[in-house]
Image 1: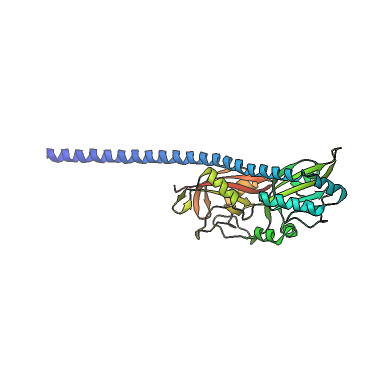
Image 2 (image 1 turned 90 degrees about the vertical axis):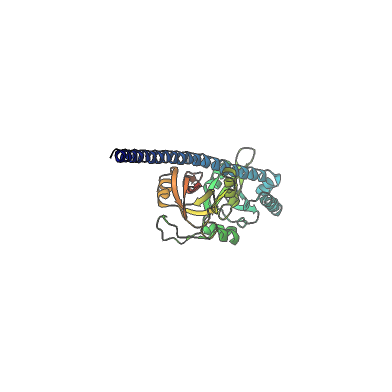
Length: 317
């Protein structure tokens, strides 16, 4: 009887210790997991700041290129006397090709095209008045992100219009829409005014880089922030630039191993970033998996929200 009692006591003590150990392990694991995830969320916010540095650097390099394009005296002569237009076009095409721009154009003070590189509107045609071009016509060198309509892209070239054309792809958790296609161009654009000695604007040189299906920028941001590490066949870190809520350039990968062009942002991110103009940072469902993510609105020079810059860290890792 005494032996049986001691055996029962031992079993009870063992059970109590096992329960306490299980609780301690669970509490410890939960605490560590929560701490790791919270630290990862903070890291992703810093990653987004780093992504902005690369994005803004691209804008600054574009501004420098356009500023170089505004220096030759032949541009002033062309604007003043309407001569040597072909020579100016050749100079602009040389710079466009050398620095990887999609277009580089010279307009007069009335906003009428005088000369341009490949993919510029035809000579004699009035240009659209987006915020970048308009501020330059008002005398201020400007750069930023702007949207170009499908019709205006066609005036530049069918090639650019075709590159901008992106069919929308069904995306889980995205906001419902009847829209089937995004055909606008999202462009990094810079414009520099050309003055006469009294300070009057004689004309403007403007140029741009269209982001639709241009993967070099998002890949450069990813490599700078995350490197090229892969986890279970997916990039550990991903970067996307959205036009509105549509991915127009990204290294997020779909199940078929292609880039997730045409997929859309989740409804909760749409509400926070595009409608409220605020940063979203939390776990988010990205195409087909969960990421610890951060999203910021992209605004044009007039302050209107035109898209989103996103970075994300694969949650599974």
